[in-house]
Structure formats: C-alpha cells, structure tokens
Length: 151
Length: 212
Image 1 (spheres, rainbow over the protein chains, first blue to last red):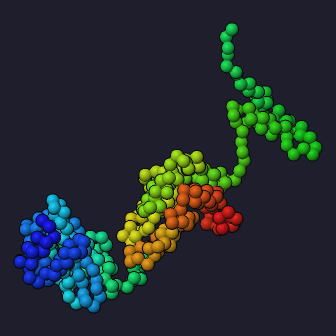
Image 2: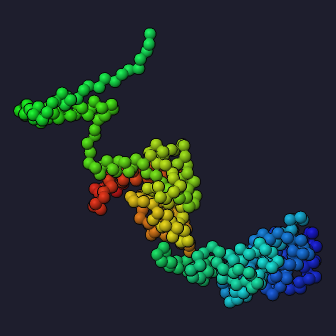
Image 3: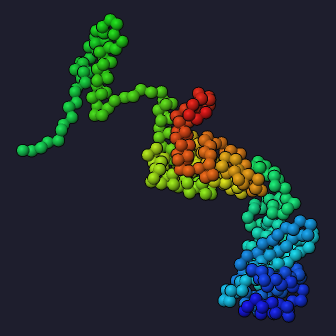
C-alpha cells in the first residue's frame, strides 16, 4: 500500500477529505461527522491496525482540532488523521469502538481539553484529580489558576 | 612453649578495701587543704577507668541525645523525579552516606528524614504529607533541587506545587537542577549540624555560621 494507492482509495470513498500525500506522515483531514467512519475505513481497507496516539490542538477562535495517528505496520503506511471541530464545539465521535487503544488517549484529551467523546465507554479524568476545575491545556485556562493551599 | 594471650591487668578499686562507713568518711576528712578533688573522688575515677575500656565523657543530656540523633539519620526513600537519580548516587557506594550513619530505608515509620527529591505535583502533595505524617518525631526534611525548593522550571505549570514548604516544614534546601551528589552530601552534613543544635524546648537555637 503506497501513499498514491491510499490517496486514490480515500478519494473514492471520502469526498470531503483533504489529503496531503507529500507530508510525512501522510496527513488526512476529514469532516468531524466522518471521524469514526474514516477510522474504521483506515483499519479495514488501508490495513492501519495499529493505533499510535490521539491528541488535540486548541486553535483559539478557530476551535479545537482532534489528531490521531494510525499505522500500517506491514507496509509502513502511517496516516495522521485530523478533524476540526469548529468554534465553540467540544463534542467529537469516539474511536474506541474501532480501536480499543484509544480509550485512555481520549480520556486524556477529555482531561486536558474538555472534549466529550460520544460513544466512549468510561469518559472521566485520567491524569488530574477528580476535584479539578477546568481543562488546563486549553488556551483560555489561566496559567496561575489558584489551587489552595498548594498554588 | 605455649603462647598465651595477653591478660588485661585491672587494678582493684580502692573502695574494696574500705570496710565500713567510718573509713569512707575518714577518707573524706583526709582531704588536703586547697585540693578540689578528694581522694575518694580519685578512687571512684580510678575505679571507673579500671573497667575494660571504660571511661566516661560528661556532657549535657541534650548534646548526647542530639549526637545520637545526628549519627543515625535514616532517610526514607522518596524519589519523585530526576533528582532521585542523584539521590541514589549519593546513597550508593561512591559517596556512601552510610559512613555518616545514614541508611536509606523503605519505610517511613522507621525513618527520621525525608529527602524530597523532585517535582511535587498537586496530585502527589497529599501522599507526601501522609508519608511525612507517618514518620515518628523527631523528624527532618530536606528539599532537594529547584523543583522542590520553589517549583523550579515548572513553577508556572498548572499542576506543580510552588515549593514543598507549602506542604511540609523543610530544614535544609539544596539548590541545583539537579543537585550533584556533592551538593546533597553537603546539605546532609548541614542538616547534621542543625540536628546537633536541636532543642526540645522550642527555643530558637543560636545561629550556626555554617547553616544560618
């Protein structure tokens, strides 16, 4: 599976996806509504069975962007999946029904960015304490937010 | 010819020859003019010195107890971050704090000292306080490295306690990022100096030129 073959397959199946085959890794930006469908397509059709990581980026007024990387360990094809949620939106489809390894990654995303993943079986904080207020990796989170008596 | 081991010659104390109280008092009355020590006192001293290896150093009780305390400071192993690597090097054979009487111990209930080595996060702070509370009094704490002193490079992070002295009282701060084993060793020696000045009464000790 080369990048060109993958680009052709993606273009046939997902018309709204933007593909950048020249970039390393191979970057695909899909609409948020097709997030899980693209993940299962990448797993079944493109052979990307290894879920590498998932994270998010806060682009301030442009809203949040969710990023995930999946690998085809047989052919070396690596796909960086991206989706923009849009301004003010913090809901996203969960990838846990497709990749079981996305569980804790999405919990961390929820912990740090406040993104609520629909379809996640156990969405709660993973790194910070349960009594934490706010989501610290958002740009709107003040760095010196007090936490008495320690901060 | 048979070789015998040397037999220690222990002189008999004088008071073995004293029959009764009158002789004892007589011994006191024979004290010469201008002499501060009676012969009885000399006899007692001689008796004490005649014990095998026996001699007495007179000292205030505080100084004796503090000597005992500072000679067996057992640090609880509490490694939090990269400073713990330097702490392990300090405890290992090259720098060898065991010659100072320090044994790294894995239980807070048998320890006197907590070396807080590394970044204290807000999530870790209650556990740190709990382990500190489990240590029996008297107890000391050494804050090792910039992170434990003030938050260090992570001071403006969202999850870092800005200095472990917001959680537990600290006796010695060791600067560095991370402090080399020599620095920590110097801090532990300063702590021993500080323990030597320890008072149970709660009065402030006189300023120590090495520490204060």
